[in-house]
Image 1 (tube, one colour):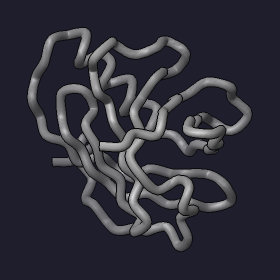
Image 2 (cartoon, rainbow, N blue to C red):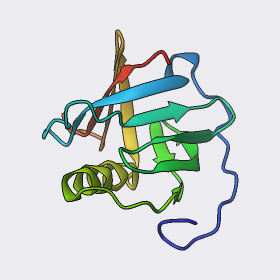
Image 3 (spheres, rainbow, N blue to C red):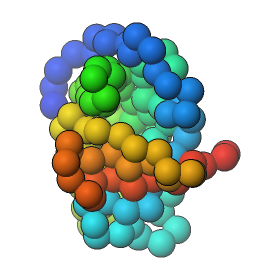
Length: 128
């Protein structure tokens, strides 16, 4: 089920940079940190799909990459309920993914942010 009620269409990225592909673990969401021991992940695949675990629910979707902007398509997610603090962090995570994001990799860190912004979603490379 899509969170916004839309259908999923494949908007696969034409050329996804190899350094962007992989599993990333959220370390900060919009400058507010993340809950300790809550494994919010984002897996970016070279076929234009993304997936992960948002803290309570698993999710999947498709993305496009154009002119350095990463645009995540509608999110399909399981619909479990968790404690309010977990659901709040999950909502904030999904909210960040709703906007077109620039991306920057510095070592093992990935920053996804609105163009020109210095905070957004900070993730660390995560080997599962």
